[in-house]
Length: 490
Image (tube, rainbow, N blue to C red; front, side, top):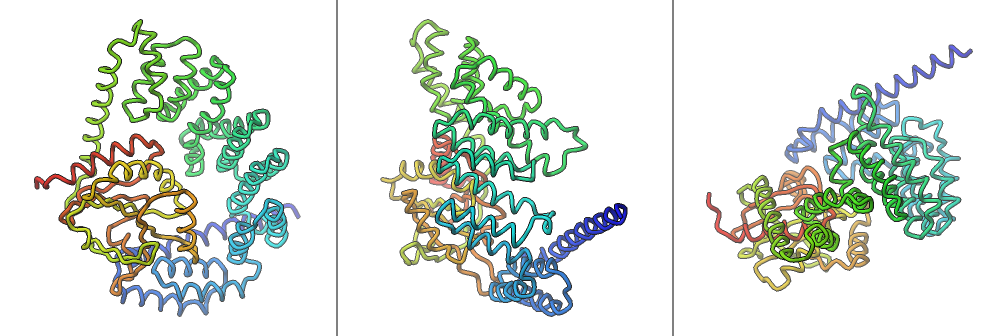
């Protein structure tokens, strides 16, 4: 009997793996048309896919076609097929995901979330979706965070223990630990953050041949989990213990030195290793982290016997930073006409690029679900405010790739809640020929994506990624904008 069960399990695992590979291959087959095809080509692909539906024998086949139709911009077709699939597979993953989105995440209280979670695992037990445990872990982590926010550390800890995917659970552990820490519950937060740190370290130190994508993802979080835990040690003045963890980390992952720099210099200061701390502080300052200035000034005075000469030293560091940014932005240089657009803002007014000729325009493509986008917004706000009196500069925040049908309401709510003084445009107008939104016309492959357009309508700089460093973003934007104000040298 045991052999039969093992054979069946192996067969199911192989079947699932083959289905996933088939889906991936099918998507790759149509990727060129998804990315660069004409509207006629996209229509043709949609018709071919819809003709195949009658032969489908699994929900995975339906899901693959739904995803391709969505990527092709065929909203009506994929919505119709999604409805059909839900009826055909009422206990399938599509109905489950809809339940998570519309019931669990829309719950107005933690108690309602818990009730929704219990219903979720009853109607769609994890045993039937063993290849999709991460979907459940997202829900569990959210529930744990909700309990942590309510101050119920016992329930928060319990649900963290229900998470299954070790490679990802650090994300839930860190957020819950930080919520509890902010509320003053160091006793509960400490072991939670240590678990996140230990998990990351485990994956980080695996032999290279054993590191798959999951392991690499988990190890990338080592600096943040380490910082969260070591900050507790530093707050309790356990500097020597903190240093032990940090220096061990730097041996295992020297590439994560930047992420550990803040707790490292504090630990060095606490153990009297002032010169080493000073050197790290200097590097942080020259990367635009001006929040460390008080400590930098203090160490400068202690190491030099007085504050004499500090202002000149400080100015030299800022000059070095400016030079570094100018060198860096050269990598972002380009020169080509920007695609024209006419989109609606939050008030329903039309805003076109043509109407802004004579101004330097900063375009920031973003979405409410994009954490790197949101992370950069405090810095972008500071940059915009620094140009508040410059009529020759316009910031536009291009909301794109939203996933929710109620995206307009969500965007307004997000901007209002965070008090961002941004001019937001909805990038939801599809080209009649290609079916593309403006992000695609600009060549955007991932967000956040920023474009600096000069007064003549030419793209002068293109950059991706984000930083939480407000001062750095502000300086970088200044250099980009001022460079775009100057005539192109060709």
